[in-house]
Image (tube, rainbow, N blue to C red; front, side, top):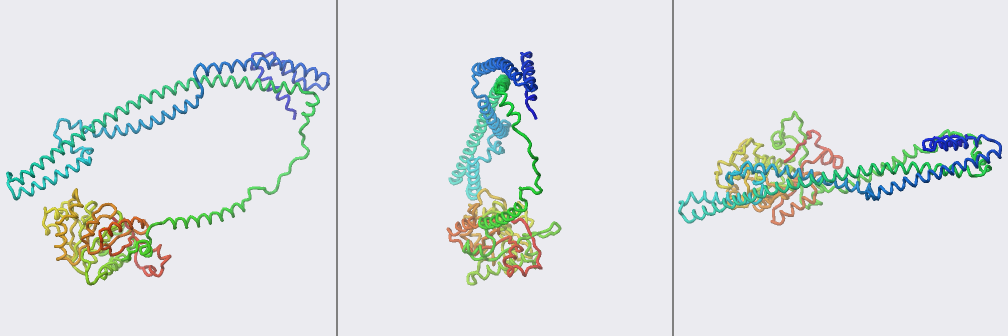
Length: 576
């Protein structure tokens, strides 16, 4: 196929779009006749004519290209445009940062405005009215001053029962109370002043960011207008350059010799058509599938070993002995309670007495009773590393199990997150441990019989602001000594060791400590840290109870240990 007539037609089309239409028509006709003419002399004459016409047209296009380039350069210099894209990208990035900061500033303003509106609504009222504001009551110093004020009020109340209003001790206590109230009022005013200043700063920050954002948006609009005009000039330069390059290339081709043109017209010929292969050379599907299977098997095996290596949780009794160095008192299976089952995990020992769970609780009870026959473990403290490991559920069920042997008392000493009261239908208004230790209620009012009468319960009572101080008080120690004379066993549900120090204080009064660990969840490093805190006070840690064991999973490895439990149901629940 001869491509020269086609190229000549394109050249003529481009030329006709220019101003000199007659010159373009002469060039197109001359080039078309050049490839039609067969006489050598005539072709040479036409070649010279075409060369002259192309030379004239090239000179004209060269001037237009030069003028358009000069106009583009003048526009760049006149508007100080060096790198439009760079300047625009920087401006856009600044706008994005300002918008992000503005969103944060609005959020900060909304947060401070709520407290500010509350302050404004209570303007002119006494300082006590401002204690209903969340920002005021959550202030650490205000909370501390309120605690001091509460202690002073309690001291005045106690002294008023023994002395008159003019007694020196009573006068000193009253003065201390007035000073505490004055300090609280002063601190509340400082907090209110801080809320007002914080709101004003947040408002000023929002307004400043909005002004800066508006200025940047105007700057982007100016850059877009300059960029549009610059693109117009650049397109004009590009079109003129393409026309110039096209005519220059055609000029060089036309100025070549006729012999070279004849050889170029016959440079490519089809000798023999190609044959289509019957089978594809690639891809080799079978090989790819085989390699993929091998690599997948290797990857899955390595992944399984890696996950097993990275698993730092305690899964069975061997992990307890190897990683913690403590004996395993027993394991509690993971319970699975259906929607139609009315059983409660906390009372599973009574409701499912023939279940695997109940049998595990009895096994742990036997281990506790036989741990030291000469010195019975009367005060049993149950704790764990963190929350949700099942210590409360174990404490309740173990107390129920011990209650079948001797009279048992269950104490809810987890005053930060109490839950035993709800299990036995007790309300927050029912007197409990906090009222008993504080001395506001008598022992008979705080002990509540449960179940068949062999088990009593003292729930946490009203949540105090200082549970650690109550548990470490002399009053609590005397109370525990008094209770040991009336009960064979005392089971105390304590707070987690890593969360607060309540369990550390209770450990000094305990005969034995049972540490509950949630299987396949709690890292052994965390358990070690909790045990280390207990060892620092020489706590009598009796052993570990491994909770929520998946017996079906372990039966694949220890069929001789768990294979004889097929008659029991499998239950699951969320422990506290």
